[in-house]
Image 1 (cartoon, rainbow, N blue to C red):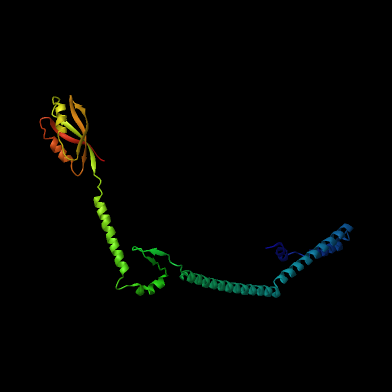
Image 2: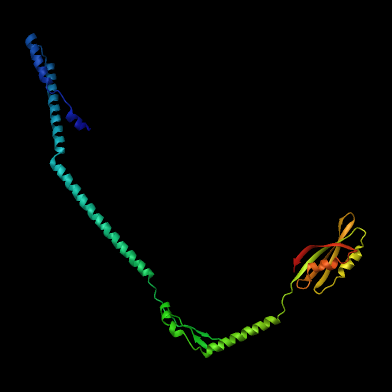
Length: 273
């Protein structure tokens, strides 16, 4: 509640100065006139204040009643109706814009899906295998589908036969050249550990027995004696073999035939060359 409304509803005793005046007159009749000039001035001021309060209350009451007049209410209702009409028209404009935008998107989608125009350029001539030149044809997919039947040659042509013969001749020459070319020989480097029976075995004789094993595709290399323990030494010897001709099983079988000197043979290392 505002201050103006509070003052409008406040109850004030405006008749108090009249009662005070009547009371004064009563006591004057009883006791005689005793009122001074100061009291008369005070009463006049009180009366003026009372009149001012009464005027203020009347003005506030009139202002509160005029604020809720039917004319003001009618103006407010008119403004509300105009705002509603304007809001409705704006909604309609927005819906029209949305419909136009959707139509535009549909047209753009259709244009994007439509096939682009293909410009035909003159095809370069390509030399044929028999020395003649053939003009290449470039066309769009629709034209290719229409010309499929025209491109079929049911009886063939002399150029196709000559090209096929030339192709067969070149394949035959390539096969002959490849057959004459020597193939790559696969070789391996093997390191063997040859163990004697005991420390009294003649290691020189043992190495001679190992090197006496000869075969096509076998080449012996360097050797050395490696201590094993308790005074026993083993022969470690290297060799190079052709994989298609010599295998490790064959080497072990041939070397272990010298039973008087050799106890066992092990492959210490095997590497492809």
